[in-house]
Length: 370
Image (cartoon, rainbow, N blue to C red):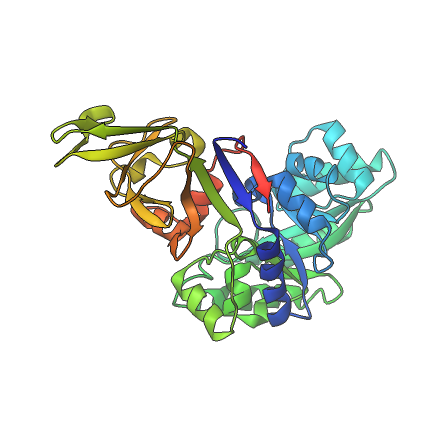
């Protein structure tokens, strides 16, 4: 067993999928496993999802991820954001029918001309920008663009989709505006598959569920926001975190009152204390912003981080009542008895969002499926 690792709970993953099948039985479920499956482990999560009968397809951010996924999973694959115009990769996408995003006419023309050489057709997903100001055709040009792409001999429209700017917010006015704009477009193309719902939108506004749900953060048992969490509770959705971040004690030492801990001497011991040294730091994805703020769990007890978190080491203070040994398991994120360290707790302390807490975990750390 390594000194620092990630545990992936396969039962919790399946449970979270079932929660969305319950609220959207008419929609296909397409998990988003981009960016190392939100830090959970691309290969491990893809392998588990490939075996799940409730999953209809998988989504990634770019073609490089799609090609890697093709080696693991037999599910249909949709690229959500972008791809390099690299001929070998595009040829595989064409041969394997990996569907690619189109958000401008230049991309559509390029793919059509590429496919023309082989007499095959690319599957494409047309992205509409209804208000997020990222990738996509603007609302005013969308209908004309879709008709133009429909006329391309070597392109087949797999779907039309959009993305909401603040579906996780308490105020839902803007998502209604975006949905209205999107509907005015898709109503003109009733035979084409449509999708718009991320996790938050699927929970907050059932009208967005459409043909399929792009199940992102909620797949991993995390809520996009407090407002979404409350809406989920109203629907009796019970999400279970999939990831636990663990390490072990590699040294124990006694410090005297007045001694300092770590770089910059940011913590001075107010009294004699016992310190445990952990083989994890900001290189492993345990943010330096957690220095002198976060707590870890050892034998079900909270132990505060002392001093600045280093690149590969973190120091924590042990309660006088806690009898720990070298090699003791330490929970950085997850449950230990009745105590729990959540991604939301760590995100609040490091002034970010729970997405970033898990996504930034070093991809080289082993992921262990339990």
